[in-house]
Image (cartoon, rainbow, N blue to C red):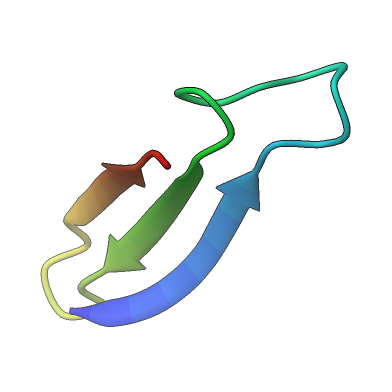
Length: 40
């Protein structure tokens, strides 16, 4: 799978998993996706 993008907490307006990050991966051959949540 290839890293495609990430979403992070933006200031205090939008908090993901207590100031975490979501990493998004995609397989361009079969078009499957996977996301991983990492919180601090």
